[in-house]
Picture 1 (tube, rainbow over the protein chains, first blue to last red):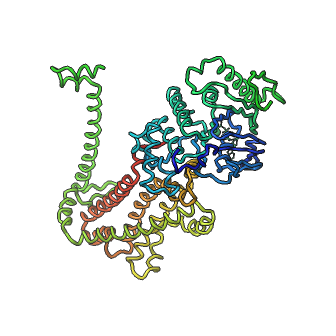
Picture 2 (cartoon, each protein chain N blue to C red; picture 1 turned 30 degrees about the vertical axis):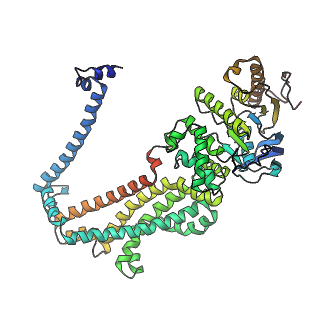
Picture 3 (spheres, each protein chain N blue to C red; picture 1 turned 90 degrees about the vertical axis):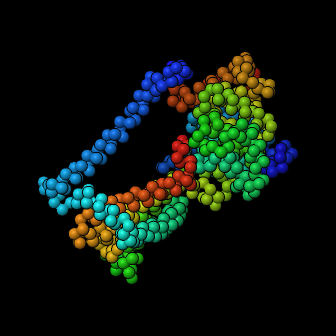
Length: 288
Length: 284
Ligand SMILES: Nc1ncnc2c1ncn2[C@@H]1O[C@H](COP(=O)(O)OP(=O)(O)OP(=O)(O)O)[C@@H](O)[C@H]1O
Ligand SMILES: [Mg+2]
């Protein structure tokens, strides 16, 4: 890692500790409770995926870790310090493309360094380096409006990574891409993570994606979101697309799908009360 | 595939143009131009016939100058310093009134669009005056300013002010909050969020306001000059009526139309220069 990193350099930075976190929004006349009593820890350099039904508060939880959504209960500590407001050490790649349309690819990627007051001559090298990593050097003078969806999300990754964040959150970053591009992006993300070793919290609806990418999967309940299941993914790294067909992979996938299906059925009022027990595979839910 | 075969044939290079669908497209794109020109010519021909025959059915063409007479007057006037000074004084008025309006309305709009306090402080009186059209200000403006020159600049100012203000407020208050969150997580502070995200994001809306404001200020100025002016293109047009120089009325009208169009075009071109991403098409 290069010198201007936010990390302490010990490799221990990026530890997230969420304690009894609750998030509620005031929606016109009533209170919408998005997330209730979540307690979970993410180790430095870990890759965790959040799965859960739509509206269960995944984006809200990411926003709270980033610092632009405030908690109504509990506390979030990153490297032992409570999160109050957003800063460049915790980057977010959003669900929707939200590059600055008035800036070129290079201008977008440069933004974080500029905000930190790094001079133009000193911005050049890190920007070149990250553009090269996401294979966008030849498009650096294009505007985002001219790029394909996959390229836009690569700019998004580069824009966050140039800050060398200790924590990177991704909110359904590849949901709008076609299958081929998504696979390439997933590979690129794993490669980048391997090189930079930041803590990743990844939100997706796609169970394949969750299992293929992460060390650990958290399945959330319907709103108000709580953690329904928490398990490790024991697949060997480096991961490759051929693991998508292994029996281990399929067992994990089936387990996730059942949990999700049950949550969505409950939402439609088709089951009542406590969800029926789903038979867990032997790798065990860490919630016991 | 077929195209490639035809155009790669060495003996029949020109055949391709007739065979290809592109040939059909070319033919189609010519037709509208011809029709449009014909339509324009027909209107001018009607004007010519109606005015030379002094038609008087509902609309009275007896005193309407013919296109030929207008052209003659134009040739004489183009080189006349008097006409040019009328034009120049109108242009100067519009640009000073419009310029003041742009600076003030953008500044106020940026503040009001982002801050409740600014909005509560400034908007009530501005909202109260908004329904009054600029030209309704003419009599009071004449009384309020020491000389007619300033009152006329004031009228153009009022004409341009509200469209610029309202569009700026709209642009600033509808900035996508995800862009703001993104900039915060990239390390921007509040000031940089404003200068590096909110202002550029609002720029297209501001330009829309500027171009509507430019049209409005020409409209207001011409009216003011006709009512209260001693020179200027609006005054010139009205004076031509009182002096019975009828071809010059039409010339004045054409000049007013051209000036309005050119100044809007100028704004658009300048905007495109500063906002190359807008012309490239929407990002979303
Ligand atoms: N700013 C807000 N104001 C009011 N309600 C909000 C706000 N943000 C989110 N909510 C509500 O909180 C709940 C959780 O929203 P959130 O976006 O976190 O869910 P999500 O899990 O990310 O959903 P999805 O999978 O559809 O992206 C939803 O019911 C949503 O309507
Ligand atoms: Mg979401």
